[in-house]
Each structure stands twice: as C-alpha cells, then as structure tokens.
Image 1: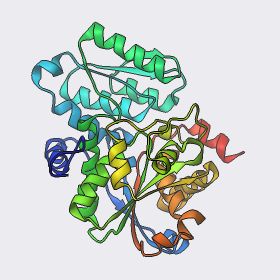
Image 2 (image 1 turned 180 degrees about the horizontal axis):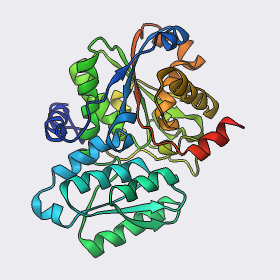
Image 3 (image 1 turned 90 degrees about the vertical axis):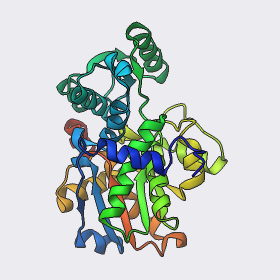
Image 4 (image 1 turned 90 degrees about the horizontal axis):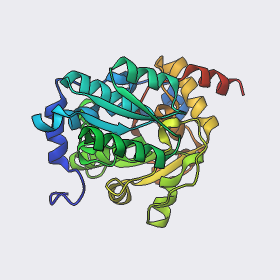
Length: 327
C-alpha cells in the first residue's frame, strides 16, 4: 500500500483524519452483554448512526469538501445519491458555505430527502435509474462548473470513510474482526486499508443483503458483477462496486457474507430494543451477519472473538419500517 496502488492509503486516511477532525463526531462504541450472549462473541458497536447527518457518509463528504481549493469550492459540488451521501455532502457544503447540487432519484426515502432540504442542498430530481442519475448530474456539472463528488468511487471519499477505522481501533485496540456493510464499497475500502495498516492480522468481513449480492458475486468470480435489479429493504446497499473500490475489496476484504431481509429486520429490532439506538436496515446488517448461521457455523471465523460492528446509519423511513415489521 506504500506505493499508493489503491485510490487511498494509510497516509491519505491519516491526513483526512486530521482535516475533518474539527467537523465530525468521534462516535461512541456501545457494548451489550445480552447481545454478546446471543452471538457467543464479544461485540463492539461503532455508532455511526450518531454521526452528523445520521451516517458515516459525513466523514467522506467532509474530506472531499474541505480538501477543495478556494477556486474549486466557489463553484460548489454536485453528486447523485438516493440518501445518506446526499445529506452528508449538503451538510459539509453548508459548513464551508458553498453550494451543493444534489441529484436525487424520485424513489428516494422521504426521510433522506428531508435531510438534504434541511441542510440547504439544492435538489434536482432524476428518474429512478443510474443512467438518469448520471445524465442529470452531468447536465448540472456543465451548467454550474461544480466539482463532482461521487458517493463512493472517489479517493477523497474512501480516505474520509477510512478515518472510522483509525477511531475504532483507537477506542477498542483488541478488535480481531470488523464487520462492515458493503454497497459501492467506499466505506469498507477505507476501513480495510486503515485497519490492516494498523493491524495486518485483523479480519475485515463485508455484510451484504442477499437481494443485492453483487459484491459477493464479484468476489466469487474475480471481476465486477452488476445486477439488473436489486430487491432489499436495505436501500443504502443497492449500489454496485466502482473501479476504485473493487481492487481494494478484491484484495483486502476477507469474505462477504449475505443475509436475508428478515435477518436484517430482526437485527434492527435488537438495535432498538437492546442497544437503544435507531439503526436503518443498511446499518443493522453487520449485527444480522454476526447472528446468522452462515457466520456462526463457518469454521473460518471460530477464532473471531472481539468483533467490531459498524452501525453505519440511522436514517430510518419509519413508514417503511412499520410496514416491514408487520409483514
């Protein structure tokens, strides 16, 4: 990693950590004897659901925004996102006092759209497909001259998300395994680089919904697989890996474990009832993995005893949640 063969390295993550420290929360780590007993492991929950903007995305967004030079910043930033990245970028831009143009698909969760509005982002609607999102964002780019900040396929974003691992391992140095949600791969890429630079023996496992298992398929086949459609309650985990995140996932993520939506919903219930924190489906998936038979019965992970779980976000669309709990 010292020759920067990836889009980020430990130096870029360390620099990001120093740059964004005045703006981000050092989020707490929670434990629960009840959940330890259920899992048969010692679990540590990194509560990025309590991060500014309600998700880990504020780390990468802050690094991207505050690393712009004055000329770039003056024209603002643009992105396309269905949720947490949109809100995070809008908030970071607000803190720097620059415009944020946010392209949002029409089917985005209402709670996440409201967050973007709350933080002063200028919303431009697109159709609910990646082609429309990208075309709309490109149109805004040409009209405004703003800087594109991709939700995950961007070295600044990956480095910012990697600051989570520096913090987590400082708070709980004895961690031997990390379980991190995977979607586009920005979070787990940064976390894997940061964590393995500090402790090369640490295991990094990705948690993915069965209804959006492109990363698991990619890992198994050795090339990026994209799905024609996804079907999962975890709306934040429907993206496909990018050309910057894929090599890191391929090389540094030890395994990808998939779980069903019903397991995710059960993990959300535990988060609410036992940990007393509001976690969105995408954020609860790490707990779903550690409680799954796939994890418990796999001999590879029998030595994983001190497990760090990233609760990546807490922006829950309550209407959808109640419906899912009643099905």
